[in-house]
Length: 334
Image (cartoon, rainbow, N blue to C red; front, side):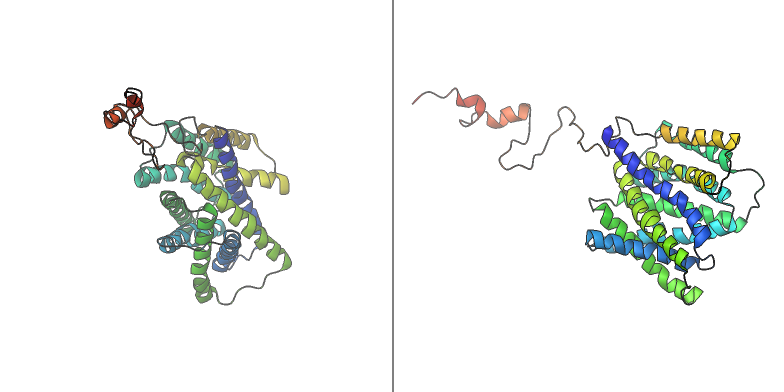
């Protein structure tokens, strides 16, 4: 159980970092270069992780990295940028808060992981909390912005479940590096063709890109994909609700905004939803221990000379064998 708590804490790094990314991007990064902004966020992060892991894709991971990089990086980064520019942050965050339910349904279809009742309840409670915390009814709604936000949520949810399905023991740091690098490389030609030369960056913008690249991308995505390896999908999706919570708390601390009673109530509901998705003792993923064998189940041991079938079959195998343990004591003395 302690291992599950540790993986929850690691996974929570991602939505907290992503919650700060909205503020940094809006305040310091160029607003009219979304493709270059996404490429400059993804590609350096991928190269940093590649330098750390020093592993190249092999076999199927060449095309898997391209597919995951397209969904989780290229498409997702650009759509999130469009949504953040055309929608109020509160509305964009509320649309993205539906992602836990989307991830659970995608996991059910793609990897046959049936969501627990508590996960579904947590998603409903958390979504209600996000709506209560962020929606005031005064926002001007852009149909294009809502469509971009929904598309970003669907693309990332599908990409995250594919990453979980394709987790074949490949190092998390390496697979994350390949996705980010592939996504950044796919964005560069599109940015050059659409936006022309790269924008000139001021010193604050360079520091902002450094933060977005190292913390909100390299560290955050590594933590997120680590959580997908070790925790149920429903738990990971609900942890993602900490993203809008971080945005609200950041506005309170930096922008001197005041938390209203409505926001405090919404915050309490979001945290309740996250708590409902906590791993249980029956969630074996991430405990580091194999599930015990069922009674009567054959066990294969990859140890030279080891006995491979316990129970009555062992007795049958050795019956009449002078070297067998049960027969050795019955042989007459020479």
